[in-house]
Image (tube, rainbow, N blue to C red; front, top):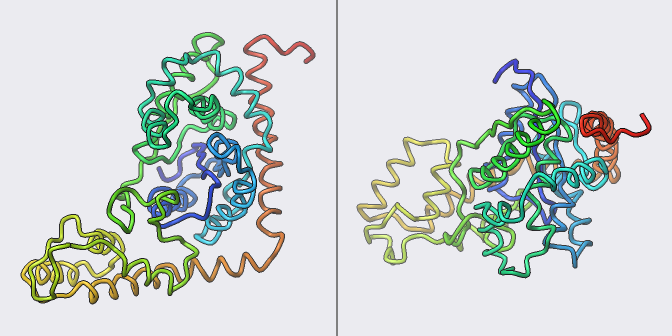
Length: 337
């Protein structure tokens, strides 16, 4: 991708601070794209999308807007290279969503695998909020408002991008060539399981290690990690597969040769879980130290993060306004131009 002239859009739902799973699944990709893409990069704090299932708690969403932006900046996002903005403050996205809703059926939305899974996880049943059901259309508007053609996603979000491409095809067929199909940038990292080993790391499942966690928090969470329930004594043979500590070490331990030796020893017997957990806690804290330090520095400048978002939102609106003008012209509803 080096030297490409592509437009990239990515973002986070502001429902709380970001965790290690977010870093591996999206933030790391964003930082790589900043270095490799010579075109435009946009980062969106997706507060409208967060409100689709948090409408009764807007304060939670508002408070998290600054936090998720702060986490990305602490990890190294450069606002001089990436335009950082707040979704709800770019009204053109909402207007595009209305137009795109005419290109999608309710039946198709209900059959979207990502939406179906999330409806089941949240227990909505038939009482799913319309905004939640329609969020793939809103997401299409997020992307196409900036004519983005590369979007970093996890593999679970690929069906949403497929729906965006269906909207692209329908719009182009009805109104003339306007948008490019979207190419996903899928993270090569494995999805990080939660510390309980029961599923992916998640704020809602309370099984996450956050980028802002201090050293004691990290150590405490690592000590709670699921290992091998049959590995009662250090002398007992243990299983590496499904052992959360080894799953994390596979990702974060820089010394792969030494790690392989530890795996052999653990399988044979003679290696205790506490030793492994202390190793992992030390590795994670070393990884998080510069992020935490940068976060403290940025948080100390009270208005800095919101100033960055305000300036980025102004730039984002300029781009989206131009795209919306073109869309209205193609749709023949540019009455007063």
